[in-house]
Amino acid sequence: MPGKNFHLRTTPKETAAVADAAVADLARRLALQLQQDLTHPTADERAQALARLHVLDHLQQAAERLRRAAATDAARAGAGYPQIGRACGMTRQGARRRWPGLFNHTDEAPTEQLTMNAPARPFDVLLVEDDIADAMLIEEALSERGARNLVQATDGVAALEHLRNPDSPRPDLIVLDLNMPRMNGRDLLRILKSDADLQTIPVVVLTTSSAPDDVAGAYTSHANAYVTKPVNLEEFEQAVQSIDAFYLDTATRPPRA
Image (tube, rainbow, N blue to C red):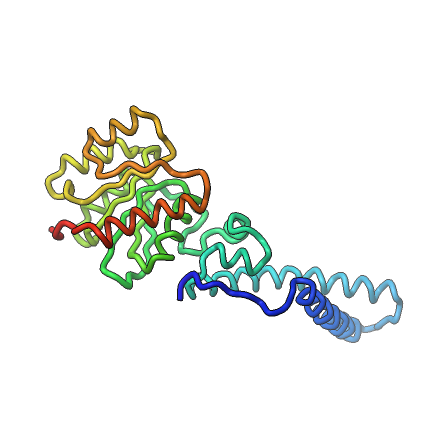
């Protein structure tokens, strides 16, 4: 079940003791093997210590690669950053900083890149957001409510290209940030709500701004809702899930064109 909590039966101290003993034994055996492979092996204590240090350094690099692979496997199995962070004794912010992009996002910044998850339910969400961290938060929050066919566009131009592509699925919901390069959310919203083919798609503005002019301007341009991004991560997640619950579970959606 996605988001299911995971608890170890051992304490962190007990786990550390077992891990340290196993790694130390492995390092000694690998160091011995490396020394035996030398043309003139030596029993010098300094050489042995340096060989163990060399092995431990490579084990640390290998462990980090394996940690990334394990975090990716956990995300694919339905774990969110809170569970992944808890398994490593860190916050979910720490896990997100350490392993960004576990939910099909990358650190690259092409303005027209679209990322998509295979849908398990007939809900299509277009996320128009250029902030990678916020996009990952939104995708994580949606994934904890169930699979979504999520497409991300990083500005208004890329969003319009996607919406006007006859091969693209028509989204059931558009989640729109206001401040983006090339075409911002304000301009995109005006275009969407003046386009006869697109104006019936629900648009929720999700942005950091709480300025009265931005709120009034969004509703004047016929946004369906305006939500200010909470600073608190849990409140942010709850806000996204509330939007998702109302527009995709509760509200009757307009028929697809």
